[in-house]
Length: 175
Length: 385
Image (cartoon, rainbow over all chains, first blue to last red; front, side):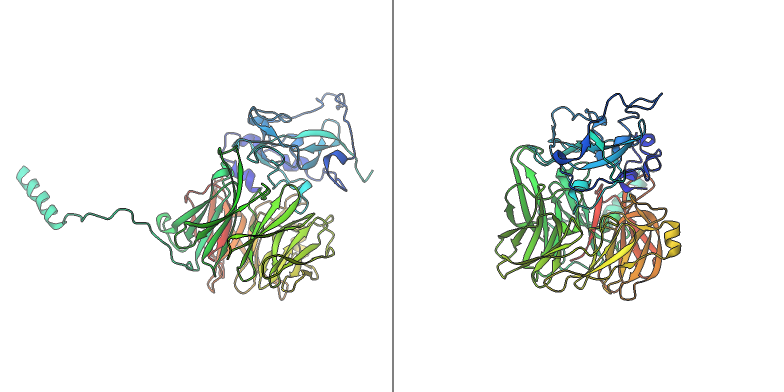
């Protein structure tokens, strides 16, 4: 078990933290190759109408570590901290610089590039701590590293929580 | 009856003389160097990062009160290093004038090991100091402890060189595309770059850039990523990969020289899915043996999973000598550097709280658990300088 998960074991969100995230996501990541500077990413915009029959297009609970977009997240979920999966909590500032993951949306079977923009300027939200490491790399690959403080380019570097914003579809280099 | 009780109380008062008045204002100090089984627990304070600390603990003591020797603070995921020669502790840290907001000040703070009081500081300009989960190699001391290094990431990467004699910045060395610092040669360091190559730097006697060499990748880090956390001993560094290879790197010369990788796993280990992982999950003892955390049923993304066993390798023979089953799964380990070493493992107990499990490193026997010392997330433990 991952140690950050373990740290949250005693919290009220125990059930949400300890379902089958790892099993669901194992082996499903698609490696992004080349540079990962966001403006240069080879992405195609996802259609909001995509979705498997009988399943919402964006399934899952954004306040749970299991939510599909959190496959490479490391930090407190903004969804539990007064924000959402793509909005910062009131009074914080969203970092324009970030790390990315490539996560599988179970609704349409497609891989999406997810930008984990941090929200900054207030201290640790302190709840819903999640740590998934799909394609996480050490900090010599900062674009793929979730152990850095990504409150960069903001007025304050103090870290509050993390979002998981859909950037677009990942182009699978194997296809 | 009342008379008897009164006499008894009088008797007690006669036996126990009144306490003398005590002096106020007495502040304890610590020995320097610290005894070999004292350790320094670095609390990254994940839930209130502006208020981290490093706690000095006696890992031999049995009670919490006897274990706790003192502490220093660090601001916002500060980096930490020590110098035995200078009898100092170093913190690279950041503050805002209004707590979480306002004007930012990055500072390299120097503490005396005996008094645990700050004795100097060097302001680091530019607001670029690296912050993130605490990394051993984000702050290092080199060149016979004359210079300290502090890693910057904003997201360009560079290194502040701090002159510990002059208490001033000597220079800033850009390390584009690379991260962290591993002491190299007489007065230098190497950083690990995005392609898996090492970028080696030597400084002159004033701490200015003298020479830099960008090496070639020793491994395909896309196929099997190198961990950035080596075990180091006597100028050598051992860098494991996610998949269980070990890359030896010779840092004794001016330029990092990667050697031939060897496997940490045999066929049965691979079949069971044993993999290295955690946070600072490996260290060496004073003989150079490598202690390293492993977890079973690992996979490509399990590189930060806690280990259930510590495996002991002799890097000379490339053989695993022992396996130590841990009391609690652990993310980081540290070995004391004496000839009767303790292994201290940072784990989580049954309630999820961080604890430090202390083992006799040579026998593998669990001795005691250090807990309740006021640290919530001690990701790293450092040996006595």
